Image (cartoon, rainbow, N blue to C red; front, top):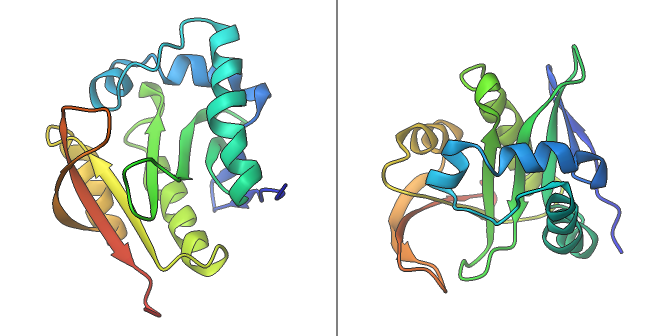
Length: 175
């Protein structure tokens, strides 16, 4: 089992998500934007959130040493969302993603946290490329991915889905 690292930026702590974050996960996956842009995960109570962490988040963290991170604001300890590097079925390579609670949007937290994980992906985890998927109607996330240096590659359909999503990619400077 690999021990996942915690990362820091100027304003944020990115800590591997654990059972202490069940309340955040419950709230986050039930926000209107999560449901619209990512999909309903069927997490309806705190027990569901704990099971989601145990069954979906923890196994990848233990297997790869990276995965989903809880975004915490240093100044007051608020848990504001999550970002991560995901080994997603149907994608070649690792997917980078992010989501914030509505109160904390438009403060630069998504870019700051996710950009730090992008740097770790290439610098610490030895990845040579990262991908991201986004639905066409989510222009805010498309803009953030472009700001981070990812480029639109093509539209794809993931396994067990009928919806087409936009695939973005970025390669490390060493490749």
